[in-house]
Image 1 (cartoon, rainbow, N blue to C red):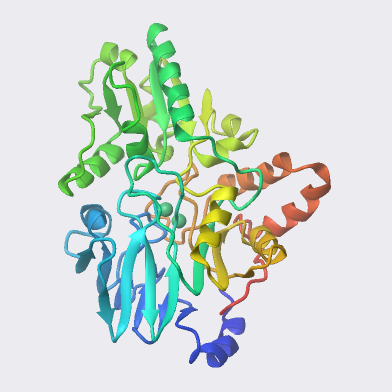
Image 2 (image 1 turned 90 degrees about the vertical axis):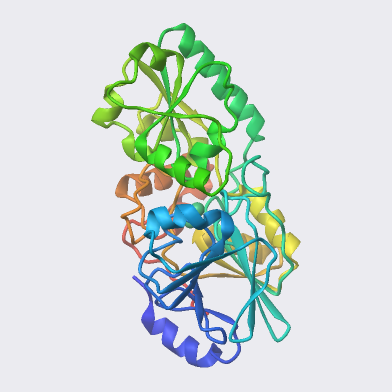
Length: 400
Ligand SMILES: [Zn+2]
Ligand SMILES: [Zn+2]
């Protein structure tokens, strides 16, 4: 999948010049001898956040934000060698300065700023620009080179303010409660679940959790993060209490025996992909709530603009479409090939260590593009994004 043939000549040409490079192991700083979000085990890994496609097990040493500490230990192993720092604190590796800045994606998520001899690079990791009330809000960081995600880098992706979405969710919960049905909401266990939890109208009833979400909540609580009270579902949980309450569950539990036992219920799915007609139906959800922990089209452009960067490297998402648009408006934009995946989909699976989405998820993206664009643009974009959507065709990528 990775284009080694392209990479080698580029490395020999650019090794001396570029502070950060894309290698078979991940984003690499040769001067500092460390990687950022590597997808192979390495000696020194700097992590942007704890989602499975960015934080992988097996590296000798990790550096991450202090609010990622417990969740990283929970996901990667209690015995990992982990150094944590607050936002803005500087650490040095072989004379290269590293510091973390808020990415607004999930609790503890960070952009990694790397500086050496006056040259500044920033690796965004995943990010969103809206303040979700629970993650430290995104902060633009001035740099020469910005390595950005673009999960939702298509004009059709425009988010409404989250308060409107939470009003919808709370009204829907109230209605289900009156009808004697359990309300179930699916969302990624790290980030989305806590964002939902902190914005629910808790006067309506108890918030129940699936074990994966409760374990995640527990890890965050051990890290000193105050979350509203939640109750783990067990065989003893009362059916009557469930009918008044709301259940938070990870996307991986959709359609499971565990879920079926909660009947009668109404089921809603929270994801940026709910923006696209057909996505709700494909997930058998009664309701789709458009809520994403990634920047939308305008958010991506404003974030990139605010860095004042000379060049942008796009790691995952609609890299072809988005980099072409950035070039049209005057940015020096490049696509790069990485193994970062999609944490907005239904296939949350920490063991999916390739970070590549399921066929169903790829199909959703593909179909989403077809449905969301006017007919004259469908064919072009459809072809472009097949490879990124994980359908097996490798798009042409540029190594730096
Ligand atoms: Zn993420
Ligand atoms: Zn990601």
